[in-house]
Length: 505
Length: 92
Image: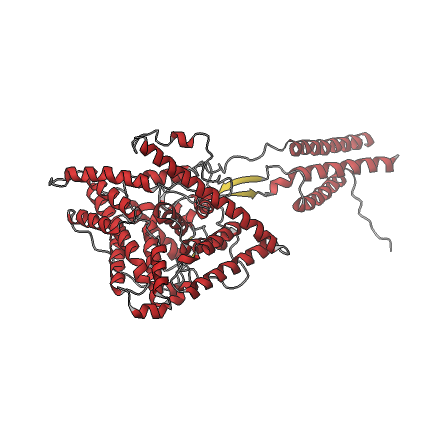
């Protein structure tokens, strides 16, 4: 029986050959595409570059690096002494009058803050108590609500949106509310600062004063919940953590200042700081973005902190993980605009940075915590355990960053860290020395050109953020394979035509 | 007032406590609001101000080689089809 054979010839044969060529080219292009149709890469801002509050400050990773290395500007004691003289004059001129101007209240805040910087807490507290007495009574602090069980992401978003709405609603304070807010916040902070060391040592009366300070801070938050990108919420959380540690010192080496469980094993968790939020036509801060969009964008940020067990113990306001930039910005604010470095902040920054995969910054933060460990806790054993913890984390990072030569990697990192810290401290000192010389020369503090000569020919104290807060996105689409497929089809059809030609001849 | 219990609890000596109390500024004082706080925050922020990248911008110029390959491939397809049709017409 003769077998029938199908023969495809002519144009259908050519089309078939072309399709086969296109198919082979498509397979090749799916693994390596030498002829993409669209440009490969796009730079997109990380989600945390959308600040929590409209108009707020967005975190840059360079800020964390700089704070750890003291690369920020701080006024010196001479500057505060001079401002205190000016503030006292304003207060004295108005003290006997009945109706006080905003300048009078502002001078009271300035004097209290200035005295606090110079370590004169008693007079600072007396001034703010005087200011508080001349204002209407403060609103009551909201009562503490026990944390609920683990939240779903929808509940987290709903809570975030509700908090944001409250913050936005309170953004336009009346002048009176502004005074109430600043007085409560300043007095609460001063009480905490004066009495916390004694409270940590177990003094019951000092603990009571710290609790009064916390209550005032909560009243300040009730008036202005979004002030200073929510720093005060985290300040209360931090103080509550330290107060709880006086009763349960074991929490110091179990959780950090924001309730994150201290890692105790080698694997380092987080890898990415946030997923991509690719809003089109975005340049700098978005001109128009709804509160809901802001929540959606920020929902992509890696969340850290707030272990539920810790939250119950320290009566934390937040009961669920929070976007990592919120506590980070708060710590940066407390460090730079508050009282400067301390080991609790340093170790917390180290853990947060490790969680979001920023291992070099984390290593430097742990190094700083070791340098500041004398101030961690009165008990020597606790301090030693902190140092052990930090060194273990540093080693884990070194083994990850430079497997096989961890020791030399750490040595190099330590050398760079010390050099950079020395540079930052020298810059701060030069800035403060310059302030002193200007004041001696009779230049007014509010003179717009006060610092001009200092900054002339001097590099920026802050490091450049570069593109460390952006994502480089490699895009892939089906259309990208088109040039390969068309060229493949064309070439195979050409080969098919030539081969047929030869066969015919 | 520092209680004896607290010293026992933390196992520190009085001189050690004094040292600690003097050198430990647990500086959680974020909320000091003076008249310069706003400008200090703005000054701090301005040091890091750089516009976010524009996600709609292409980071590379259009790929001329890819478009050239597309044109060559298209030309070859058209050329071979035309040749095939011509040959068939000639044969007929």
